[in-house]
Image 1 (cartoon, rainbow over the protein chains, first blue to last red):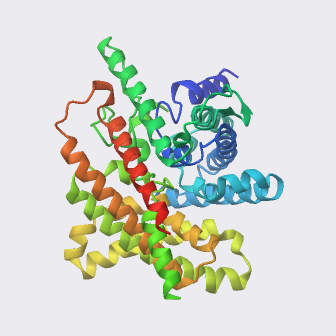
Image 2: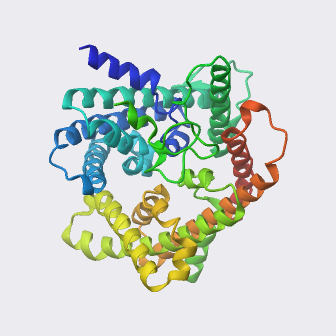
Length: 238
Length: 192
């Protein structure tokens, strides 16, 4: 039981995929034009993440080591296809809003990253909850970013008017440039926390900044400055 | 016909730029843009792979998935085709065109899971492009990626010795630059 709680908190706070590890930035920027879209994308990703984690963990002793990445990708792509068909059938409005970013969940590095670093080494139940925890963390982050963008860019929150009548929406925030500015502010805050923490002598090596050359290796490379991690990064913790 | 292709070319490369308005391929865009030389290498490799991948994916969709009525498997098929294709291209270049391999080799593995490649293949299907239109769309998208990554790399080279507030050093300032570029690219939307 403790194990499960630890996994959930780990995903939500300690290793939050967006705020701490900076993984999966493409969907984070693309679909957070409103809080609702952010939440929808987050929950969709969570379902895929939890199911693929559980399934990969179940097969972890059967899949040969050499072909594990293609095998993981096929498993993940199958679940993404299932979720996509379900969304198309039951929540068409969300399906239309997220569009091409639903099938692109396949290349979201959080999912492959968790499969590789956790699910392929741990039993089914912790892996399932690791997926749920990470997914909740991702949903939380996406909803936060979506709320900020929607509030500034349209003056609403989940479609309800929040700002006073006199507020003129700064619509650039729900357009593409706004996404970059919000993420820039976010990473600057994160840098600040990291710098302050290092001054106080805390170990901040887990906090990543930005992603590397491709989504596959995103979880173990930093790009703008050398990371203090040992080349395997957060994969080592398990 | 030619007019349609020209419209696809302009809209995919400039108006709805793959990185700056669709956020695909953001990882290499931010990761490999420190120097113009590496950025242009990456750009050429991306043009090569995406153009080839959209041709192959388009052909497989039209001649395998549609006749067998299994179009719902497109995501799985496309990602496997792309991964295999990149591997194959890498081996082919290594064997037969060593000079080109030396220039592009290091970037090829990086592209395998670049979301832009899968994104283009899926967009082609979504918009009902034929194989030729799909290839043009792929080429234009990749050209748009190359244009923006080279511009970003140029700006980053100039920015290197600027006095930037400590917490904005590294990724945040790059993202702000990208945001300003996105505003500039919004100007192209009046083009069509």
